[in-house]
Image (cartoon, rainbow, N blue to C red; front, side, top):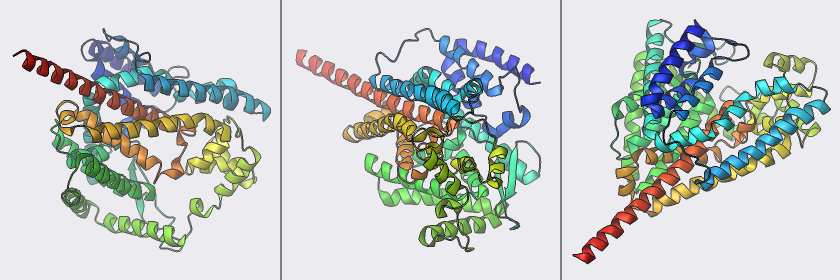
Length: 482
């Protein structure tokens, strides 16, 4: 069945790329992140030799790029993109030579071929920099549409599945606390459409005329509904923080009235509470309890039940992680092929490698344990670049007539606020998540997209200003001639 789907998808891509290469690329790229989790559940394991479904989609992504008739090299003309590319090369050289080859050999765990296979998402992200930037620069509207439609379809199926009991989309459930009777419910995978909530609030707060606005708000409401059902503290507080950042950015950039903006935020909150009250009324109380626990953890170190969080208390696997770091501070432990089951077994053996299990929860520690302090130093220029581009983009919007951008660059404005929000959140609320890109391959690809958005938005807005100056100059010349 998987092979038949791949053949059909390949035929569709070949035909669609001839007429709509931008749309086809973004459709494939969103499918690559497995929205809804269908690939992960239905097509587990490899399909063709060592290739899985996502690998096939990666290969198909090149078809719309090579179908472009006016394709050109962007690196020679876009200096910030070229800089980003150089920084990636430097980090990946360290990643391959030191993390993947030298350190594992020293530790007696060398398996370079397995490393290349297991780490291929990093190399895919590197190879896709050119098409990602090109299609971000010239196809933000198509990406926007696909995010909205994938969110609307998957979240609608999710909602229907929850209400009716039908298994229309993969859903994962589990106890929030041991023997509590409280279930956390989540989609198997959200892909990139979890962006839709922030995008919905950005469009809600800005007076921008775009297509599919109602569908965006509908998807955003269902996304908020889905987040509440996860009962994940990090998500619950993170989304609130993101909305607060969006509120501040729109207020400063677009000179909005804060009271009016707050009212706009309260309205969807009322709809969300109403939807929860009708469908899952208990989760209103559960979510409220989670927020109370967050407040209690921050102020006292204990949640409302009197329990500690090992991540904040520095106990459990965090102890193992710190021991691991103390033994391998500069270059980390290098590549290991251990599974999560292996890492769990290491707990019983008092093996410091068990600390890698906590790395996913505390990436700022996991990244040091994995690639070492030297590895983080090699990655640091990319963080400096994303901060610099966010500031540059903020300034260009702030210093110029916003109506010009509203007229010609509406989607650039939406994604600019989205990307700036990502940057601010990353270096404030999400400090514990620093250097997650060196730990998680999926996070690395998302980072590539966000930085590409920042650079593309900055260049597109600059191009619009240059065109406006040219028009103004020509008008002045015409007036002088008359």
